[in-house]
Each structure stands twice: as C-alpha cells, then as structure tokens.
Amino acid sequence: MRVTLLGTGDTTGTPTVGCDCDTCTAARERGVERTRFSVHVENERTDESLLIDFSPDFRYQFLRDEVPLPDAAVITHIHFDHLDGLGNVFRVLDDLSVYAADETDPETGASVAETVRADYHYLDRVTVVPTTPLETERICGLDVTLVPVEHPPLICYGLAVEDPETGAKLSITGDTSYAVPEESRAVLADPDLLLADAIVPASLCDHHPLGGRHEDATGVARTFGTKHMTREGALALAAELDATRTRLVHLAHFYPAAEAFEEPLAIDGEQYVL
Image (cartoon, rainbow, N blue to C red; front, side, top):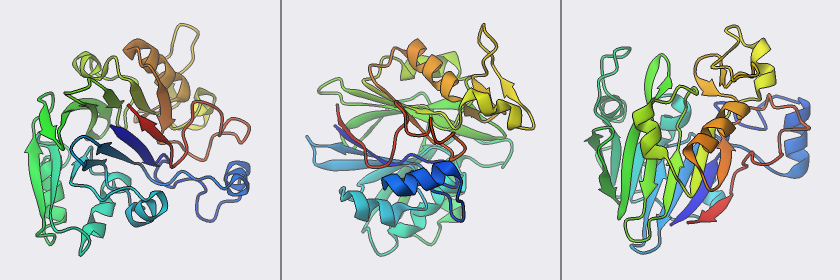
C-alpha cells in the first residue's frame, strides 16, 4: 500500500494564518507546510483508496498531491480539523462509505457515526457505516481496526491498517495522550509505519495551563496537557510498539524553528510504500 501524508499539522496548521513566528517564517522560506491532519492510503492491488480523516484542507490537499479520490473513509473523531472537510465531497464524489465508531460518547450523547450522519445529513451520496472499535473491518481490500485512545473530553480513536495479502501494516495513534489503553497498544503494535501525534516538544509543557503528564523516569512529560503526546511521549510509544519507522504528525507551529523540521517530524506530501 502507498501512504501519503496529506496533512501533518494541528488545528491551525503551519504556517498559521496571520503568524510571523520564526517557525512559520521558516516554513514559508523552505516552501513546506503542515495542513490539517489527513492520511491517504492507496491499495494498489485493488485500485482503491482509503482516506483517514477529512481535513478542512481536503480540496487543496488532493489538488496539490494528485492522489486518487477516496473510495471510502474513516473518521477518528469529531473535532473540526478531522471532520469538517467532508462537505467538500459535494458534487465531487458519486458515493462514499464513511466508517466511524458506534460507541456513544458521554460528552455528546451520540457516537462519532451518529454525529457524522447528523452533521452531514444533506450529503445523500455519503453512507455512514457504524463501526465497532477493536473489531476488524475489510475496507478497500485492507483490514482496518479502530482502537480507543485518550483525547478528553471527547472519545477518539487511532487505527491499524493492514494488507491481508502482504502483511504490510500502518498504525495511526489518532489524537491522544500517552495513556493509550493496553488493548489498543496491542492492535497498533509492530507497524511498518507509525504515525504518532506529537503536538509539541516536552520543553513547552511549562506553557500549558495544566502542564505535562505521564512523566518518564527522568521527569520528561510524555503528554502535553491532557489531549496530545509530546514529541518525547510519541517516540517513547513508538519504541514500545516496536515501530519499524515513525513519523510524527499533528504538529503545532509552537515547535522552536531550530527543531521544527528535524527528523522524524513529518511535513505534508511525504509518501511511503509498505
């Protein structure tokens, strides 16, 4: 399978609109960007494509990277930077199956699937497929498993995508703190490629009102606030999952410019063949 990182940024992206910080300036000078999160997975055996999350930058991403339009999609959670691009399929796709978790969120009183269906009721060519976490679905010829992660106050999911013919495996943490449940870690383990949420370096936790959490033995925070992993937390999780290759995503423009484009921080447009 061919994996294209359409969007590797957080909710504002890099460069951020109206921002002239050193990191946003460096991104403009380098001609690189991190738009809102989205991943394209092409199954070359079946000539089908799966989209993970609908970035608000959907139109721009597909024009820029010239990847095939999706045959199906997965929504990990209902924050706008992962969902609100779905409206872009209007008059672009004839039909689309959108897979989303069927668990009721105590915060909203609805599942992700129910929220997607309600919010995009006017897209009659979209079929929402309620999906049970930790149960594998065959989508676009690939085995896809949603896994619960921790992104309070809303429920959120990561996922594993595996080619049943070749055994190639992509794991995506989704938006999460370091406290990924053990049963989810077991599903995500041993990927050829891991895409891990790493919003900022741990050194910035002092600037969060809630500080950092899940410190390692030396006191380095693996979670920034409550919702996202730090760079150090993401790399620790990657080691525990025994990832063959790791790219850090959902990156904020708050990374210091000297660190913002170092390995293994991803930028838009990267492609990997697994």
